[in-house]
Image (cartoon, rainbow over all chains, first blue to last red):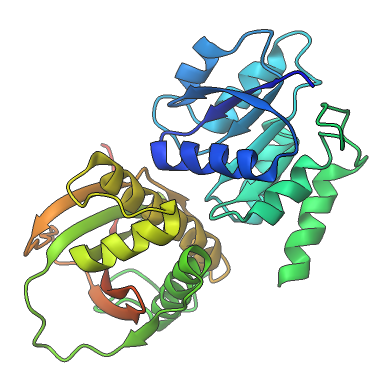
Length: 150
Length: 168
């Protein structure tokens, strides 16, 4: 099983560590991490070897959504899952990230390992390999989950 | 829109205070598994030695400023449940943690007050370590100080609702 190159973007070192710790604990795949402090830093570190992106929204210099939009403008990036991990919880923000930002999934902070597992199951198979998103209408599934909690 | 007109008000509307109280309890419960209780202040609070996370939820008209004041003992307890280890109080990581907690709380508050007509966005958080910190705001906007007690200890959330500064 080869390592999955994951770009973890958050201006908080504590949160980058929490994301990495959770992914390691889940043992769904073997990850190699590249960390970035904000969208601008992430854009510099992004290359064609990056296979999945875990992305905060609210960061200095360049927000997560701006970064995501830049990535989606590039060729051959549609297949890279972008998972927003953010404190922004309003429906309008979720809609912006998924529809205008081009993110594939949305996890709100503080997250649990179960929430991350559920989202990652769409992108990683049981052998630890990246797969195409298994949910056709993934954006609606987030809203469905949100409504379930209300 | 908000049921209460914000312009010229002397106190923060109850709708906003109730939203913030609920969000504080939800946020800390999500982080630590323990839901802190809101307690009335007795007016004899001692100066705090601890760390304050500051963040704003704002729109073009108004700014809701939130300052989470966490005493050292509580901050150490929160760091242990959030990070799995107790962070040194003087470390940069502790500031990072309190900033992130402020960020999480602001996200929850922004989503909650949106339902009562205050549509805004969150600023980036800052954290300040020190003792007996007092906040001075121009034009004396309405403020509120909310106290909470959980198993990790006590903490306060100070609020101010002011007009947003406009660039001319």
